[in-house]
Length: 206
Ligand SMILES: N[C@@H](CCC(=O)N[C@@H](CS)C(=O)NCC(=O)O)C(=O)O
Image (cartoon, rainbow, N blue to C red; front, top):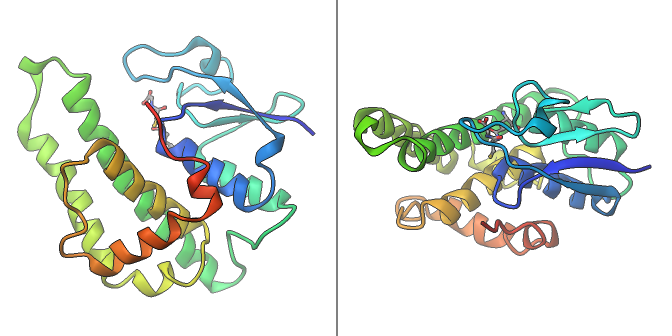
């Protein structure tokens, strides 16, 4: 079975699904397709399969597209040939899904902040809007350090993967942001999970 993935080595959402694939023993079955996703210059090859033009987008053997990162991660988990389920059964499943949604929402804010400061022409930038995105990241960090920490530390499930990719993205694109100060438990957890083969194999480049 060959599956193809519109891939970007810098995308934290692509990283989420590649980490999931490594954790579940599927990474070597994924053929990486080149992609240049951008909200201002859309990639025609992605658009043929995903009307949003975003990565990640997975193509099954018969060309059926799967997106976005949450759907792809769930599909990978369902195929899993090794490792531990990323989405547990029962009530805990919804807690893990909510944690994944929190990690993704922080990533959305980080990406929007970056687009504002990298893509938008300087004279059109809006500081309050960028500050609002950063505030989402900051309140998310506080919540991860507090009420979500026990679930986060329970195992490397889909929620933990989303958070790990979010923190990795902050280090990659917001290196000056000292998110570790004030979040010592989160910092210790991230140092530990960063040594997992799935995380080491997917360190962002770009
Ligand atoms: N909710 C989506 C977000 C994916 C996303 O925003 N990907 C970015 C790259 S990191 C992208 O394709 N941006 C291009 C665009 O916004 O058109 C997911 O979880 O996969």
